[in-house]
Image 1 (cartoon, chains in turn green, blue):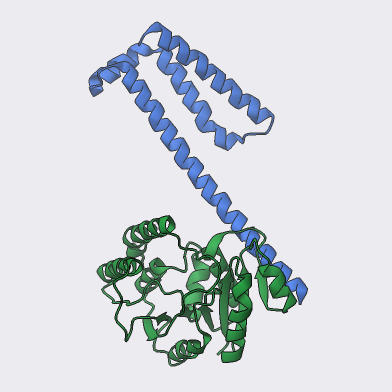
Image 2 (image 1 turned 45 degrees about the horizontal axis):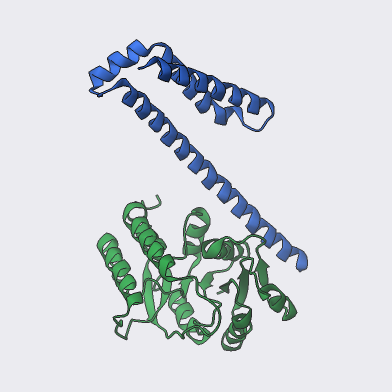
Length: 229
Length: 112
């Protein structure tokens, strides 16, 4: 199966070389970097190393970046698209596990989860994760142990859903949407590192906003999604 | 309604109406987008001319004063207008995003 790894990157000049090296050394899948109009020299670093990159002229955030990756995957007829952070938190050695699961047809979407075998710690960040997991359980009846994980593999059917509905985000509310559409979601255990350089998308005030957005989106919008006929 | 309020409403409605017409002529405003504004100012003019009707209606609806009724209509009108604007902004946002993606994909194709 043709596999594409989508690496969204915003101001990741210090991390991107390492991330791509990790991907190319540990897997033999194709990758695409989505440079979301970085203010630092991410673009130059990628060009210098001749990385496969899509460079956006206007910054539009992570959602737009993933959507573009999905468009690219669809256009080039990829069977699997994997969302993979460019900040060095994700490790490429686990990607094989995700791809194998999809190849065995066990599910449509595989989440690289931190808490399949391990227990969830009681940190402030994880309170949000628990709350989202609870709301997902409430609306779909399914248990997702790590809904906020940014490492997800989508099969062709899921990619098509992304193309069909341009309001889908690479966030937990999309998982609810996909489940309501009848797609199966499974999790595999992975480990993640803390980020080394640069700033994350999530800052304190931003994460409160994020939580409110997610809760509203899941309960009032995604939970009433209808299946395709 | 007091005479002063009626005069103010009539004058400001006329100004709003002619501003709309002027901006359309300068093609700074589309006809489709300005219909609501023109309609709003016409309603306002009618309300200030036929203030007896407004008074009667507001009493039937249980308003303390006709002015409150006029304000309520204006607020409702503004809310609708902002909602329509909000939709337009989102539409524009999506269009720019599509362009953004298109440029990125095209640039990538040309490099090959």
